[in-house]
Amino acid sequence: MARVAELIGIGEARRRVLTVARTLGGESVPLDAALGRVLREEVRSPVDVPPFDSSAMDGFAVPPSADGALEVIDEARAGAPASTTLAPGTAVRISTGAPVPAGTEAVVPVERTEEDGGMVTVSPSKPGANIRRRGEDVAAGASVMAAGEVLRPAALGVLASLGRSAALCSERPTVAILATGDELVDPGAHLDPGQIWSSNPSALAGQARQEGGVVERKGRIPDDPEVTRRELASAAAGADVVVVSGGVSVGPHDHVKGALAALGAEELFWGVALRPGKPVWFGTLAVRGRSVLVFGLPGNPVSCMVCFQLFVRPAMKALQGADPDAARRTAVLEEDIARHPRRDQAVRCRLSSADDGLHAAPTGPQGSHVLTSMLGADALALVEAGEGVARRGDRISVELL
Ligand code: AMP
Ligand code: MG
Image (cartoon, rainbow, N blue to C red; front, top):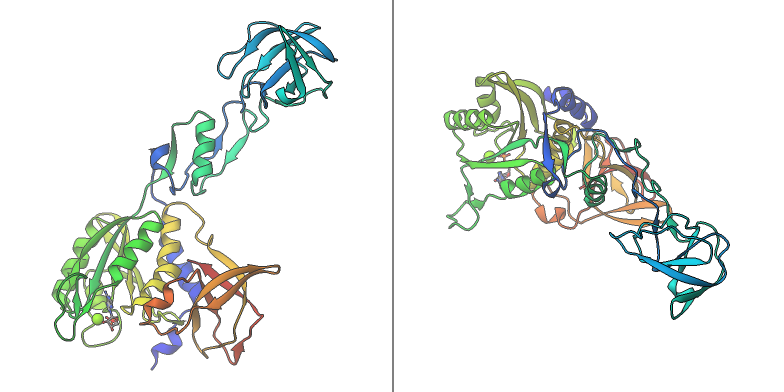
């Protein structure tokens, strides 16, 4: 068939996706709601952290050259500094986190002291011992995080340590998810002969949420051109991204492409030299001045998830201003895999780590309908098209799931 020659590679398909995936706006997000969100600002610290010299131990703050018996003249607690200055021959009882009193040269841990009445006997310590210096963690003015970073728990903690209660984050893309097919029934409902439970929307919604999307699940679309057109138009009206599964191939009951053409969508590709996932369609639909990204994913459940991973995920990263290639790694292949002469293969793999880096072992049968091959898969190994075999021990590109 003539179309075979037109198939583009995974890299070219991703490039076309990324040329039209423009970053959404930003919004201030309270820290408690910011986990997993993409930072939109460079974070500089307005202050030194810690903000003052403080004790790293429970013990006694001592003046220079302290050795032997000292008079305990005051106490410094976390949140309640001492009011005195250390003079020669004196000490201040101090708790972890308390500001060290003026005149302190070191903190002697309580385990290395002996108290008797109002006196404490200490052994000598190095200048600066057990004192956390002001600004040791972050100096005022320092750049702490870059725009595009995905906020993980530590980032939320660091923002809070700078006194921030919110961060400027990218808006979350709204993702409308639709599934086409006369054979589909919602999970939980009764199956008549020839019907199957629709699994793609559940998997896709999970993938989209994992990428920071706000998911709008739409109903099933029967294999009818008019309904397909209407449902796609309605989904696009409220979404940044439309993901529709099934009906995108060349069968007489595949209506997604035709419906999108009727709506005036601009096709950026149809067909990628990829297994599984060849018939994937991508384009844009103009809706009241906005450009909605539309992905027509193959109905086969594995193809559907693989195409989300390889094409929709980078788009969602880009929409949020994050690195679309952040999931790329290299790994050592654990088994021989026969190459496909014309198509790159996305092989579901379990990863393990060894001295020479990550290793990738296929999860088992790789048919595009064998959805359980995605269970326990950590990555897709991308085995390039060509003659012969990708050998056990070869280093190949993998995409983390
Ligand atoms: P299609 O891409 O519409 O030709 O569908 C390819 C295969 O995927 C067929 O076996 C469909 O029954 C199956 N399929 C399509 N959509 C779904 C879905 N939502 N859940 C599970 N299987 C599906
Ligand atoms: Mg179908």
